[in-house]
Image 1 (cartoon, helix red, strand yellow):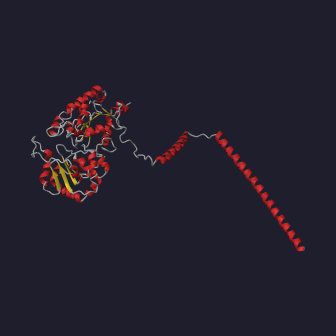
Image 2 (tube, one colour):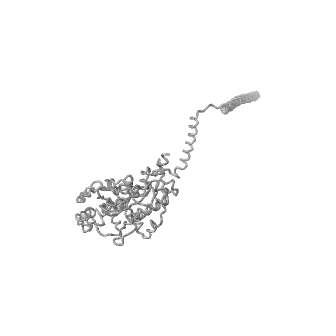
Amino acid sequence: MVELQSSSKNKGFYVRMRLSHKQARQQEKNIFFKYYKWVLWFSLTLYFFTSYLISHKPNPISKSHAVNSKSSVASRALVESTNSTFFKHPRSHRSEDPLKGLKIFVYDLPSKYNADWLSNERCSNHLFASEVAIHKALLNSDVRTFDQHEADFFFVPVYVSCNFSTVNGFPAIGHARSLLASAVEIISSSYPFWNRSRGSDHVFVASHDYGACFHAMEDRAIADGIPEFMKNSIILQTFGVNYKHPCQEVENVVIPPYISPKSVRNMLEKVPANGRRDIWAFFRGKMEMNPKNVSGRYYSKKVRTVIWRKYNSDRRFYLQRHRYAGYQSEIGRSVFCLCPLGWAPWSPRLVESVALGCVPVIIADGIRLPFPTAVRWPDISLTVAEKDVGKLGRILEHVGATNLTAIQRNLWDPATRSALLFNDMIEEGDATWQVLRGLTKTLDRSYRRVSVSTQ
């Protein structure tokens, strides 16, 4: 009994102890919550009071800080926008428009000056057809304007190379001067723009041996000279030399002869960059005439005659005198393509060689080549002086043993090929685009630009 009572007493004590501890913990919780509610009340009061002060008593902000604040927001928005669209619409890194907002008005002349000539397919495909190609490309270009008053330049589309001789099939350009003169008569009497600038902001194409002198024989071309009514204008011409010459004493842009981009594309499919080239040195074309021309002039200044006589029996040289429709396939098989002067310094072989990966060997003293800023001619071609043509074999052997691989690698740059080919629709970097780029260097002749700058 005694033990039982003692146990009951102890149990009661234990219960009382647990109750007292529980009450103590409850009191601690009450104190904590009271403290927490006080801190929370104080924090909220401080927050609302501070917000009230800020909204009702703003600190003065300087104008510069306000601008910076706006700029900061705009910059953040630009970054967010750029990041969200970067992969969808990659932006060009070009800092300015390379064509400088150029605008060209194309005269709508009667069809006898251009469209009627296209009935002969050769008109738009022969080596002088840049006059057709540039016109066609401009008609579908973003630089074309129908508002004559916002034009920088005025393009005069006259095809003078499409009158082919029935005797030899070559272009007969004896009518060029009269045809162009009548076109100028129309535009000067129907529009005010020729007369106000005396034609200085008007553009013509002269894709002939000696440009706007309109003759294949140099002495005759020089004697005839550039027509007086064109001397103040801009001429797009294949003829160009690095010395004083009467047939380039006019504002001009040197352009390449026309080679069909379609024919080049078709041939490139058959000529891979690393394809085997089994012809060492190639030339197909007229070599000599009698060897002296009936007119008393030596064709090619005897350069082609020397090539034929010295290297015709040399197995390294593949020389042919007769025409062959598939000659571009021969270019595609050749390592070196000879580009000697004819009556004039330039040759369509320059473009064909570059386009088809054959190293052009330029034999024409003083020639001025098209688009030198876009086409790195020293890196993709060889230049041999006319007097050194007899040493041609040794020169080519030396190049073959030294830097031929580097030259060939440079040749296959697609941008180089593009710069020399005229497309129906202008592509950035192609030949017509390069023409436009050349015209931007003559914007001081733009009547509109000069008038705006002097106001």
